[in-house]
Length: 57
Image (cartoon, rainbow, N blue to C red):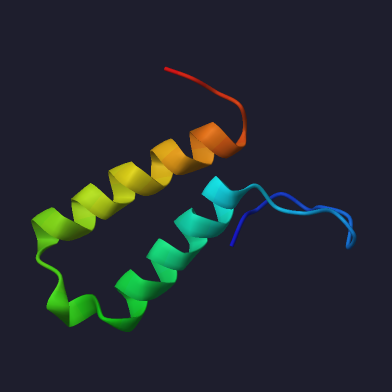
């Protein structure tokens, strides 16, 4: 989950939700991913979190 605290009535950005779901899936099915695939997921998650924070590269 995100390290930033948000008010209880605040909605999370869809990119942040997706990043968290990807992390949960990789943890759940860790053995089904190769190290290269896990690295790719980490890069995608980082980009999604950047998008959620409004950062563009």
